[in-house]
Length: 303
Image 1 (cartoon, rainbow, N blue to C red):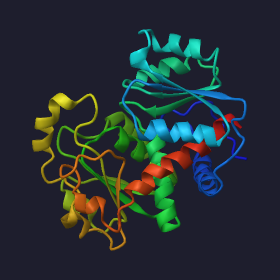
Image 2: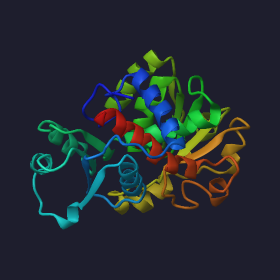
Image 3: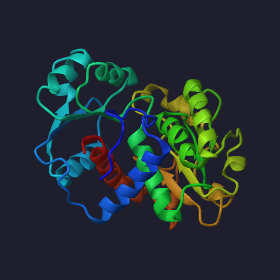
């Protein structure tokens, strides 16, 4: 059984390359054999400070398929208190905690006091569970990861941050193309570059999206206006002109290139409906793989 040498999963950097690859292999096994007893007699709390569909359902169903008990908590229904205090209360009741939050610092503060595993379901800086699902999807489609090239188009947000930290670490080259003012976090990029060296992969920035997608095996985008940035929507729409994932850009990629998006989509902004429904689209495979990748992660943390 998979056993990870970390208590928490906040950015994905907690895992070695070997552990990350073993986790993906375990996820494929769990996809074929859904019901397990890993979390029997364990209770896992899911704390949501942001609205959720995929994270909520995939974790809830995954915990139940691992024979655990789920407690869902919405921050809007609780009294406001320090994140660390919330953690210290909850760990008196439950065996693990998944948090979908705004500031990544909230998770860091929680882990300073945590005696139970804490999983980052999403923060403003990182979305590592999505990256696990993305890597699983690529592995399923191509039968390998090493040597593939993924191109990310659009906002340098938490999704790109996690792809930069995890994909090159296991051999996936990452091209990224973002407009000025919307580049990924510089500190995270520096860490990702160092990790890419050990994975034998490259991270490259392209100002021109057409150059970025040339010959790649995967085209990836995300919404241009993430939760918490709605007041910038009109400014962002103008800034991201030319970065839409559409038929023109797909024609420049490899013939078998897959189309990726973490969802939900803003149709005809960052991606066209034609691309969502295209035969090379793997959007719904990605969303399903959240379930299987997160089950493997929980097995590794709780085994």
